[in-house]
Image 1 (cartoon, helix red, strand yellow):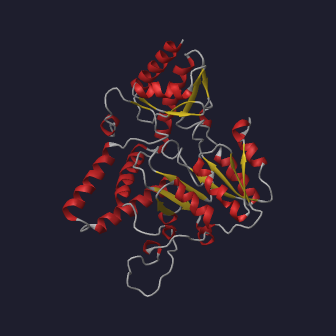
Image 2 (cartoon, helix red, strand yellow):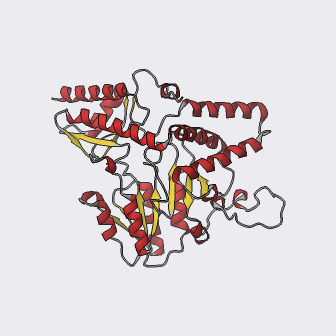
Image 3 (cartoon, one colour):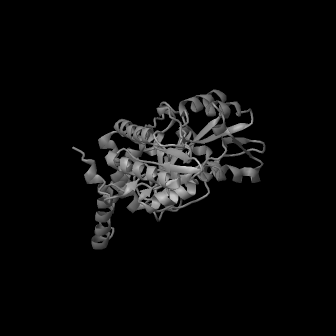
Length: 380
């Protein structure tokens, strides 16, 4: 029986509501890293075949996480930005092509497309968040020139959760590629490629997936692998990676072709351990528990004078982020005061972004709400 306090033994008085930035490791993950370090110290790489077995298991877990057809569809990358750049720099762009995205999206999901201006490719950023129908605004912006729609599943600042099924269907109808930055939803809510027919999906593991920084994954629809030109090369991307003395080489047919060299084996052991927790608990239960914690926060904030909720109230329009503003109280100032009182959060969208997780105790949320309320009272 999974007992969450054993997995997350946070310091007394800590209100950790910042999983949209960096998530704390579960106990099992810290233990896996410590054991791996101990093994390295005592035995070096004597047990490398065992390490490779963990790597294979991680690919299997990641494939299940997004319901990919095979672990061969999963490439291990350093972070979300690397995954997005593989697409940006890999497609055979033609002058006049267009990429549509969301104005004010996280910079790492804007820069790879903006950089294509050197190839006479236009990045068209749509003020979708200003629309009553953000998905409709993006769909209306798709033209005959649009080659790709680039979108984050959840907006990093406002917490708005896009209807990815609707966007995927619109792209399929028009023959447009869909590239998904999933870092703000994976580990918070389920993602299913059978329902969201994305061509590319990428995410780092250090937020909602509760793993270290420096390791993520990249999914490419198998039929598109050969269409992505490669710009980095190394031994690991070969069909026979361990034939070091062979005269020639061929690219791996699998997504390993996007992995140029030696992988982050420490991160692999850590992310594998973190994902084991999600598989034990199941993503459906994670999403249900997290939704209750967001409801708890929302109800408490609504009782306070001058609070404006930035994140939508409809459960299907949010994941794990709840951003709010407070009257004349500057968001950066409020954030600084909360951090001083051990409420770990972020300043976003002119307010404060709170991001609990499924394991966050109710008393931690109550404590954070009490501190927010007292700051508001003191500011009068």
